[in-house]
Image 1 (cartoon, rainbow, N blue to C red):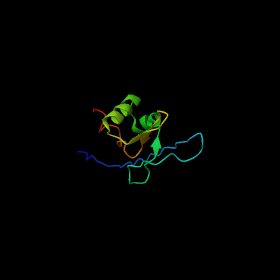
Image 2: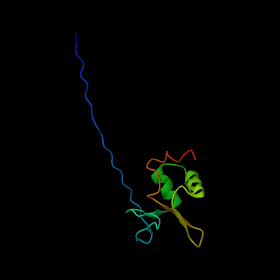
Image 3: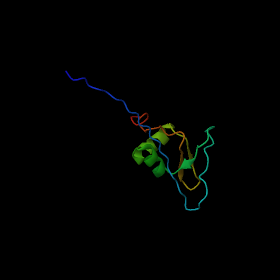
Length: 93
């Protein structure tokens, strides 16, 4: 009779995103977050990072589930720190 062997491997993934602006300056920081990295990005960038459709980002904004600021020109900026890690926790809201 032949014995089977089992081995276990652990894979750890780290992701980082490079966000570039046309002006070359750093994005603004979130006033509501006390943690580092509360950078504000466009809704399009937030959707890519959270891996959700843009429509879900706007739904989260309407529900107040994520931090955001609205500019005087109607532009919207989303706080990276307030986004769910995978986009699944709030997706059903």
